[in-house]
Image (cartoon, rainbow, N blue to C red; front, side):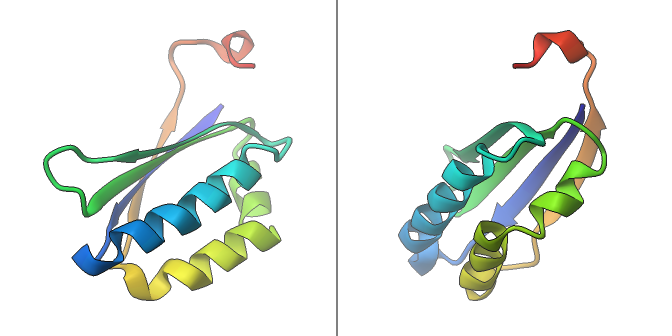
Length: 102
């Protein structure tokens, strides 16, 4: 598995619009065969900060995800909502092992 945590800081006046666009993207993303999990979380003590937890089946699947219409729509929609450029950290799973993911 190939796991990506995407850290996003949005403008305070864009929180609800960002959540709406990102929920739509997440709901479509989880339908992709290369995605095992796609979580969208909001920081409790700073509601302008979010994390996407994207679990891909292979290291090639993030590139395929970025080719989808729903990702490109999300990327373009939220670009001006960002308070700063988003960042990401990439991980490999330890537990569960490969068979532990649906």
